[in-house]
Image (cartoon, rainbow, N blue to C red; front, side, top):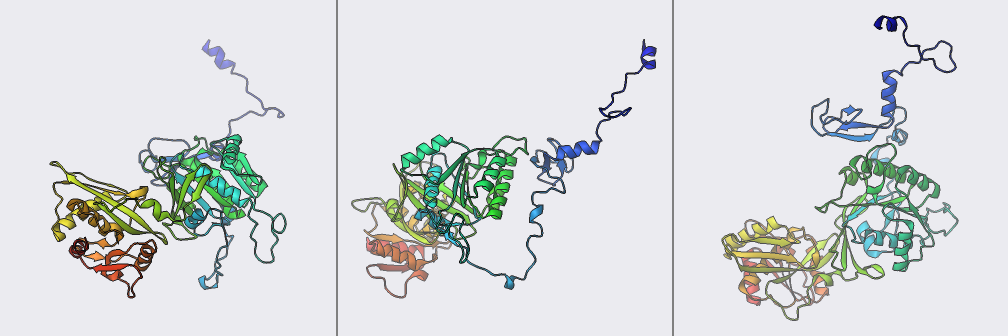
Length: 502
């Protein structure tokens, strides 16, 4: 039987349209090229590539470092068109002009953005689910759809002179009917807001080229996917590729783009860190879902100052800007209470008055140190300074510190207010009515100056405060009407000044 098979081999397969030609498998190089047209896996440690995922990099032998990304042939690279687009020029010869800004109709959002949106700018906004990101952006989109297009002198506006901006709202988490329902609930007309319910990147880019909007919202970037990658939406590869493609289109077309991003349990933006690097502005939407107040904080802004905040109040008609945000961070005590001290903090270019509360109570063998809205490690350091340089011991006491209103204070100028609030709670005596304080406290017990102290004092005087304890370097040269200022150099001097006042 084996000899018969050897004498009569199986007939060879012939390809159609060829006489006597034998079908052969494509070469190995052709198969590899076909695979590279879709995706490849790149090692984050050494940069080596692999046609498929492996637990261990075959180049540097590192574990779990291969990540999928879109593969491009050398002659069809997606960034090839950008190469050589700009000639090398001397820095002094480059014409630097201020970029025109378009207000969004939300004053607090414009403050966080540095004055409004910029053509071709890419913004990333993140926040907890249900915090109000989609509501705020839908309100901004409706307002921008009624804003006339700003064009340079002599240039023709698209759609005619005085034509309104074209706005596109791309929703990947909701249907068009759900977006329309929210707009009706907010009382928005939406006659000029175009809506696209789509999550495929290629279709979205095609719609951007067809509609040519001046402002576009992508809600959200974690829901998009590209056909060039086989990974699921929301993966690192998909988020990176979709954000890169959308950013490239925004820079080339001049469309102001807003990407909505999810956050992790720690409150940071989900996805790769490169997502925050490729965009121009990063905004964080902060606040408690059980409270009606929201904060929009700028963490990164290439077109304005960072750490600017916008304060909003959630109403049945959407988010409304708060004209006097200091009022929401101050408690409405009838009489001064022990453990309460008002701090004049600085958020970007805006001075805010925030109430800092402290509670000192008898503790056990292991006293607790807890702070909400302030750095916990810095609280432990300040308690050591208070004991060493002011003679006030809290070794056997539980110490709790809270910033009213859910605000987060990161600047060291809050040190003096925190220590005075702790001292007030420990003594059981309230600080004087209309009392404010600010200043950084060093490990040697010195009270260091805070930036822009004059603006802080003027803001406190404008809101009716009459007594202030500030660092010596922040003492104004000219007196401020209605404000008695006590300048101190050390923490023990500050506590002595408070005792004389109280």
